[in-house]
Image 1 (cartoon, one colour):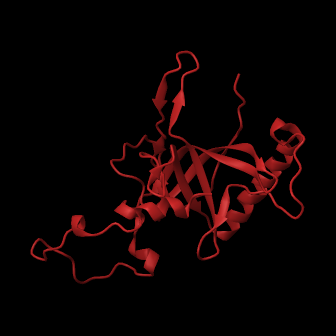
Image 2 (cartoon, helix red, strand yellow):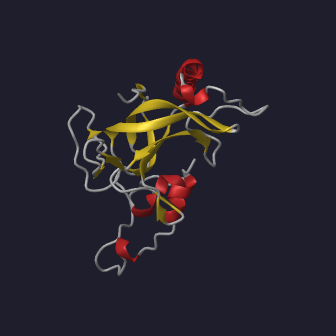
Image 3 (cartoon, rainbow, N blue to C red):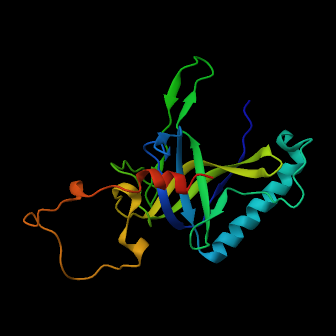
Length: 212
């Protein structure tokens, strides 16, 4: 029987670089994984890190992954996080986009369950847009790649959408530049400009930004 890792649910946070319906990419190539990054308020970030550290302390004693392994002097474990350009901690959850049947050997595509705030299953045509407010259900597993790369893996199980922001190709939203919605000019059919004319400059960079 496969090992069942502890399942947890994150606090509500802002979603970034969600790739739940198509594989994420790194340098223009599919990684074979679905993923979502989550930014939490400071207090919630500290609380989740505390809970993950407690789970890590348990796994250090019980998991075969850590047996006989010695971390490098001065190194620290990573709990599926990195710092963004603003110095904020971001959690990344990911999972393989396919799975193999142990009985038949066939390969099947995974479907990441997405739910509404009330718990209804959602069939979204596009990805979840940057800034959407979500909770993430995830499983915590031990990780030891080498003496400086170890800690926990946060395996993506499902996503609950509390507030949905429309997805835009490349992940660009005006909030990323400090703008807020205002009354004023809106494009129309006579403007000669449409979204299809815009150049997507961040599609490759998005996956690279969250690759950790």
